[in-house]
Image (cartoon, rainbow, N blue to C red; front, top):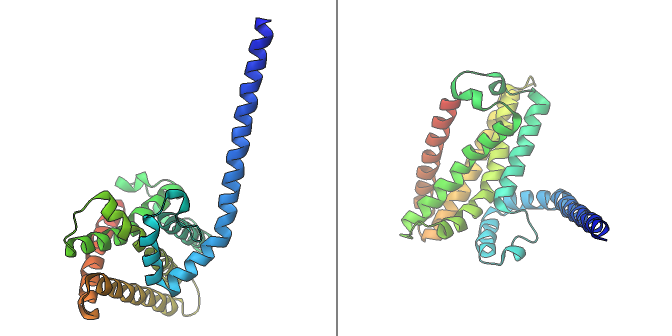
Length: 237
């Protein structure tokens, strides 16, 4: 019967759609639970062995997509999750960011926690971007998407701990804690020193130059990223 066949087909379509949703939820659940294992591992390795993690990113970019980063979090996602954690710590300790209640000028665009998180993602991504562009320029390598992706992904592994330490340090300076200003300043200074040291070694090895010359490259790149960071922040604030 034509009517019965139509009902059966519709039922089969609904069932198949339902099974696809279940399979998607299964994969999503496994992915999120996997973060609980691989995120701390990736963060520890990025803090303790940053240069090895950057070299690891260089190798993984050349692999097939399904074989990439099988024992770590993908670098851009790692940076995003780190900023998410930093944002969560800020919300738990200091409450709502004042920027979310500001409705003047471009600040009105940042009207939710998600928008604020996206803004921070853009701001802290400036550091990997400037480091990567500087390296390619110094190597006289053509600036293309594939060429830029390799150093950028590696740089995300170091930008994430840097952003987390800066966030915690800044929060400590404003928190009503004994010696909070001093502790926060120490954390921020450590974060900057750690980041510049790593970048100096990275430039030194990649360009086959001395550590001092590498430090110069790191300082130039960091200054450019900081200028862009401040300029965008001032437009919003």
